[in-house]
Length: 152
Image (cartoon, rainbow, N blue to C red):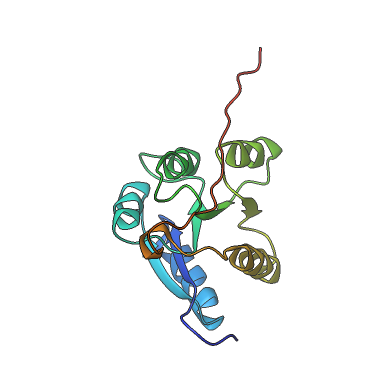
């Protein structure tokens, strides 16, 4: 474990049981976790604080995870946020839809917990640029570009 502040992870999961299991696994790694039960409350949270990583369930009430990720990518404050998409489906079309929306990685909920933690760790290691709100004035922020193409 490294010294300094713990990485901050936002978990967006509507199942209280699955959210608690994720929270416990992540906190055992020394990471700080905030749980939101739906996309709307997660977007409100992101308006106040931008974490190092968001773990988002694909199937959420009222707003699916892919739409949530699109909104994250459209906001200048959260555009560079690393996003891991989770779902109970192993279907390739769901993975493609999650990645097309702008997610950095996709892991089925049925995946081995060690694989999930490895993927989280890899995304957190990529997070080397501080959140926009904590940057010194005049510094640049790494960002991602989301391109959407229509297939004919």
